Structure formats: structure tokens, C-alpha cells
Image (tube, rainbow, N blue to C red; front, top):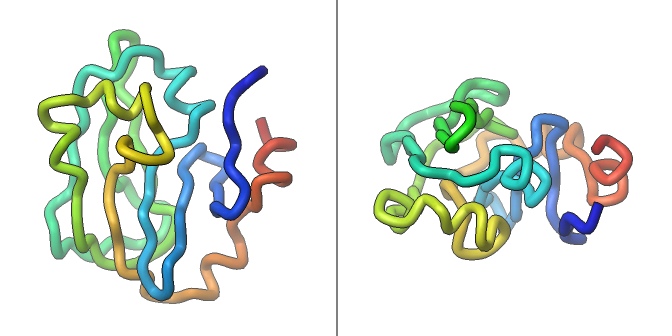
Length: 126
């Protein structure tokens, strides 16, 4: 397939990734997800400070062919949003693991991380 799956990240079956640093995590969508969506034209990000539960809608990504809900991989509080995406939503397509991140959150329960996939398990999932 040629889609990048990075080692060292956590993944969900709904194609979100997490980069965990202490009790915080950056969250984005995987290379597979962005290629399935095709050209992303709009990203609706959540409010900073919002408390969110695992599995709830985190944000919305709109592409030329569909509108997709992105789900919270773990419970926590939104600390930062990637404001760059307001003017340049295509960054998610171009660089989903670096500049195309969506939000940074504080993790409420680190045990939830144990239920996420590693790179190898995610590879099998797709």
C-alpha cells in the first residue's frame, strides 16, 4: 500500500494516532485515513479546555468527497489545537504525523492507552 505507519505511536481501529509524552498526547489521523479521505478542505477543531471521553467525537474533517468524524482515542482535556489547519487544512494530507496533527490533550486515564494498537497491530487492522 505504501502508506506510512510510524513506530512508537499508538493507533485506533478508527485510524487516529497518538504520540504520548508523559500525561499528554498529540492526536491526528493516520496516513491511511488521510489518503482514504482524499483532499481535505476543512477541519473543525474542538474548544481548548473541553473535556472529552474516549470514543466521543473529537473533531470533524471535511474532504472533497466526505465529512468524517474523528474520535477521541482516550479520555482527557483538550490543551491545544493545531490552528494552522484553519488556513491550511491540506496539511493533514501532506504531513499527517508532523505538521498535520489535530489536537494535544491531557490524558485522564493512562490505562486506556493499553487498549490501543501498536504499529504492527494497526498494520494488520488495515
